[in-house]
Length: 203
Image (cartoon, rainbow, N blue to C red; front, top):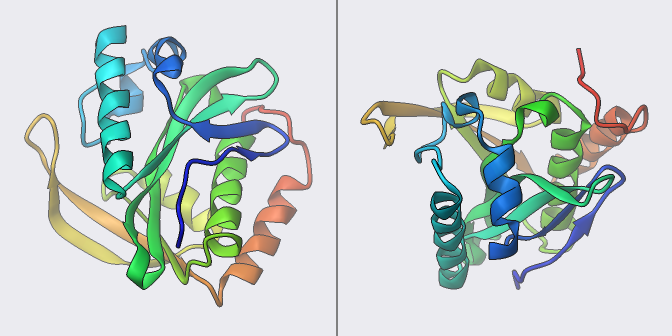
């Protein structure tokens, strides 16, 4: 698994290597407090805070454990959120997709489905992964349903897994897709994306 920064392009979004140049866009789109409710780090309160967050992600990238992306809406060229590969385990050909957040106007739209599709295609078909996992806060039922709609298999719960910024002991629900499951998952995602690609709210 030779993992390097890469740009992944779909019809609605472009996933490009996260950089300090995305600071202002991400700060402006991340102003809504609800975005950060289930994230293990505190909401950036200023552009300087967002820059610190980005630099933290880039340090993880330099260590080889993470590969962060800015999610850019192709229609506007503006960053509307972020996502990344994390817990990269090269010897086991495994990684996690997570740390994902979007501005509220882009939640429950084609943005998330296409972003996950692009990341999964790259993981299985370029990086040759045998396992891609996801995790989410056990309280975050909407995120769990979204992961399940991707076709991932629920594996279980790690109790009191993460201490959140405010001190809450979060339990995490884990999901995964294996290489042998990927062809079926891919077809399901392509079917979901075959309709209206415009970033409109989905019911």
